[in-house]
Length: 103
Image 1 (cartoon, rainbow, N blue to C red):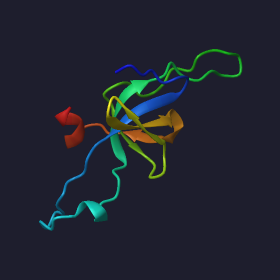
Image 2: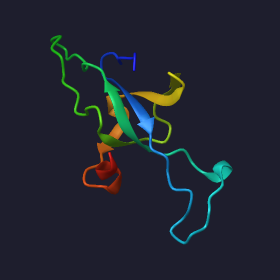
Image 3: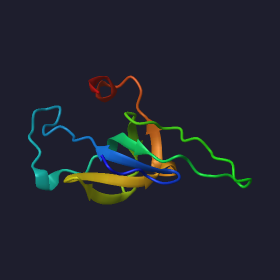
Image 4: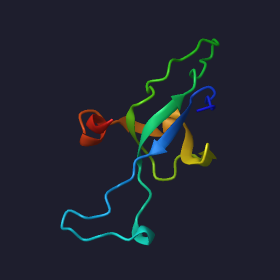
């Protein structure tokens, strides 16, 4: 991928949710909400503090993360729909989940 986020920005690929509910009901595309879970594709070098020192990001490439419903800016890079967001828009890193084990 030929894209490197700047400062404290993060490039995220949404993780698609299941097409069925736990009860087996199939959810049509028009009724699905966009997932709030994704995989970090690229990370900027980090923000700078008041003294100009670099603050290292807490996330890294490959992390499975949760983010807010309205977070980020949708972009298409190399034909793929991705999100660019500030690291502060990320709510947390998923550890030990089935999604994290799949990667």
